[in-house]
Amino acid sequence: MSASTRLAELGLTLPEVPTPAAAYRPTARTGALVITAGQLPVVDGELAATGKLGEALTTDQGAELARTAALNVLAAAAAGAGDLDRVRIVKLTVFVASAPGFTEQHLVANGASNLIGDVLADHGAHARSAVGVASLPLDAPVEVEAIVEVLPG
Amino acid sequence: MSASTRLAELGLTLPEVPTPAAAYRPTARTGALVITAGQLPVVDGELAATGKLGEALTTDQGAELARTAALNVLAAAAAGAGDLDRVRIVKLTVFVASAPGFTEQHLVANGASNLIGDVLADHGAHARSAVGVASLPLDAPVEVEAIVEVLPG
Amino acid sequence: MSASTRLAELGLTLPEVPTPAAAYRPTARTGALVITAGQLPVVDGELAATGKLGEALTTDQGAELARTAALNVLAAAAAGAGDLDRVRIVKLTVFVASAPGFTEQHLVANGASNLIGDVLADHGAHARSAVGVASLPLDAPVEVEAIVEVLPG
Image 1: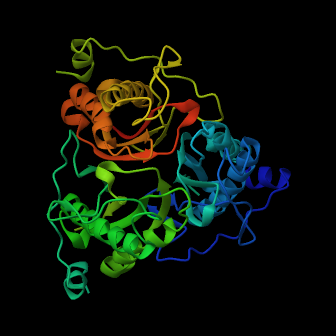
Image 2: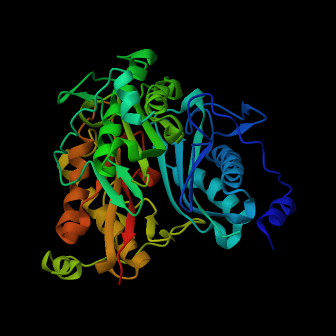
C-alpha cells in the first residue's frame, strides 16, 4: 500500500507547504537528500496553540501538536521529493518548548514519530532526537525538522 | 557574479576560521557535504556580545549578531569546500539564547539567512530551523551551524 | 591500530544499543551516512544521573556524562555501520540541560569529543555544536547525536 493511500485511509490530507516569511525555503535538496526547515504546528496559516509544555499545555496536547507539525514536515518533504511516495524519513529532530521542570519531551515527540510511521510504514523508520528548548518562534510549543531520503521514482 | 565578488561589494571579508579549543574541527567533509561546527558571533577572537535575547539584547541586536556568526559560517564553509564560490548552503540551524518570554528567534535568524542570501544568491537558498535555547557556550547570544554542499570546481 | 583495539586499550566495551521506547530507531542509514538518534548517558538501562548543569551537576560531572552518552553513540554507530572500524564521526551535536546561568556547554561537550577522538583517532575528527537546552527527556543532563560516515569495509 502506498503512502498516499495510507494517508487517505487515516483521513488526512497534506496541507499546503507554508511559505517562510524570511530568506529561506521550506526544503533544500542535496544529492538524494532533502532537508526540511523546522515546521511549526500550523493549521490553515495559524498556530494551533502557543505556550510551553509543563505550563500552558499537557503532554497529550503536545503530542497532538507534534503530530500536526509532522504533517507539515510530510507536506514539505513531499514537495521537496516531488511525491509523497518517494519520501523516506531518515531523521526527525523535535524541539519542545519546555517549562523548567518538564521532562517528557520524548512522549511529545512520539506524536510526530507515530504519524510518520503510520503514513510511511517501512519508509518511516527514523532516528530521532527530542530536546526541550527555552522557547520557539511565535511562542510555538513544538518545532519538527527532518532529513529525508528521496527514493528512486 | 561570483560569491567572492558579492562579498567584496558588500564590503565584507571572510574572517579567519577560529581554531576550536577542544578535540573537534571547524568543519568535516563527507562526500559532497561539508558540515560546519556551531559558529559564535566572534570578531577578532572575541565575542561581539554576550547575554540573552529578550533580556540583555534586542531582536535587532540579535539579528546583527546572527549575521556575524553567519559570516564565520561562510568562512568555515569556504575553508572546508576549498573556495567560497563552491559553497552552497543547504541548511542553517540558528540557536538563540533566549530569556523565557522571547519568541522572535525567527527574526534573529533572519540576520543569518539574509547574509547567506546576499553573498551566495541562488547558492544560498537554504532550509532553516530557529530555536530558543537556555544558554550557549561562553554566554554567546547566538550559535549558527550549516550543512553545505560543495559545488563542482 | 584499529578502533576496536583502542577501545579495548581504554578498558572500554561498547554497551548494547538501547531499544527506543517509541516508533523510532537508534540509527537510520542513507547512502554512506548513518544518522544516530540522540543518546542519553544510560548505563545498564538506567540514566547515570539526572538534573541540570549549573544546578545539580558540575561541569566535570557533565563532561563525564557526555563521555558516557558518546559511548552509546559509538555503540549505535557501530551497529548502524556494521563494525566499529568502519565508523567515522563527521558531526556531534551535544545538548546540555542547563540552568539559566550555565555557560560551559563546550567544556561538557569535550567529554564526548575527547572520547570520540581517543577511540577513533583520525576517524574521529568531527565538527561539533554544543548548546544549552531547557531540559531533556527523563531529566537527562546531556543528549548526544551524531552524523556518521560508513567507511568502506
